[in-house]
Image (cartoon, rainbow, N blue to C red; front, top):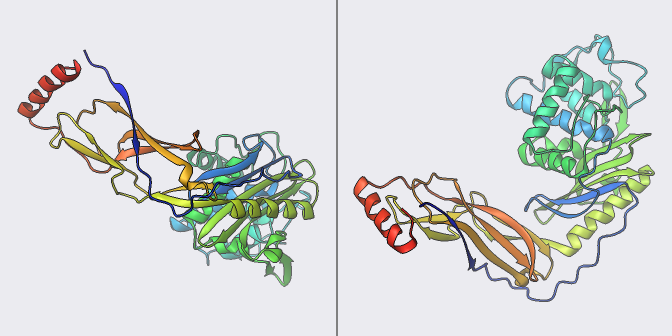
Length: 383
């Protein structure tokens, strides 16, 4: 008879210098419909309100437009110096949104379009880029939705490249934080465009509407959005001491309010939380007994450094346990999920992370497998 048992055991965490009691006040009460604070080092939500609720993203949509344009450049389907000729259909005069003031039939480079999209929030730039990438805005929206699914944006659907209101165009604060994090992670060479305070095209200079670029020295991007139905929205990213946080705030009542409330959120995260590295990549957290393999143990750990965001002073209250299914029988492939690291803070569940095999272990020869089968039968009643 074959069966598996859940096996739970404690593991040691790295020693921490700080052992004082964490003193973390509740997050600030913010004037917005939804908000969320995300730590890129640990991929954790620090605080949130209505983080998974669906709202209109307005021009925060253009982060996905930029992401797909960056990807097209990386795949050599677009080039920064490539000229694009805007069609009259891509430049309607009555959409009521921001524009970089493109002219029908006048060529514009992809580089200028990216700056017009991100800094000036141009709807015209969004449509022209969408057409350059996918042939039409409708086809581009399909690409946006496919990429959103790949990134894990479960409460998002895009109907256009601009963010103009549409019944089937929505996202959530959490999904938009995932998107902002993906831009910073996947396109670090393009990310600085989001931090430009102004951009001039065709002799006309326009200002980036992200006020935090002027008032907070740590904020170096991302994107604003507004519509009458969505309210004032802002995704902001700030970096202090090699630690990056992303805030997303949806549905504020004014331009000034979205900036001040976002700054409160970022300051709260930097002041009261810190990211600590628990384990190094490709270093064994522990090893487990293995049956019927060419080796009798398998090392498990993480493919990337594991960071955890915790309240400042709370590291000493962390406790770690590992849960696996036993017995573990070969073959085991490298990267195969073997168990789960469960972390508790102050005696309460705090976070979970999958543990993987760090190296493959193939099946042993028939004689070794037979011997292990006999041992398993007498030790655990498993054949």
